[in-house]
Length: 123
Image 1 (cartoon, rainbow, N blue to C red):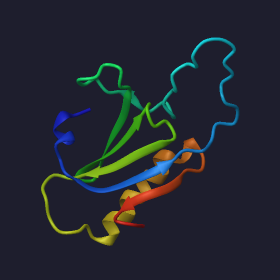
Image 2 (image 1 turned 90 degrees about the vertical axis):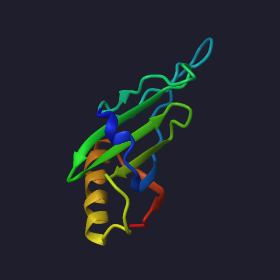
Image 3 (image 1 turned 135 degrees about the horizontal axis):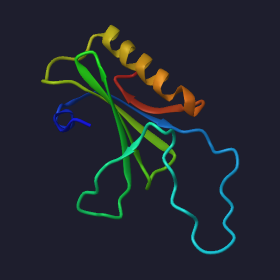
């Protein structure tokens, strides 16, 4: 992951709820294992000030920007997807938003049916 992308402003974002797992893990003794990230495309992010925090992310270049997908083990039912673009400016044109949504749908398709909880701008 390129570090300069993390400093680009978020110009559009989507928060999605992941589908329920078909069979939750069965724990016979002790604490349940920590949740695993959905999809094999997410990679661990180096720990910040709290080493117990588990965050996984994926970045993919998309046009002049980057689509960044973030999963936090403390909120395992959701994914946050961001479109980061260099520079600030006016609202993105509708065709750019549609392109972002198309890229997100293609990337998240293997995870099953996800439900959009919030987004800016809306679809």
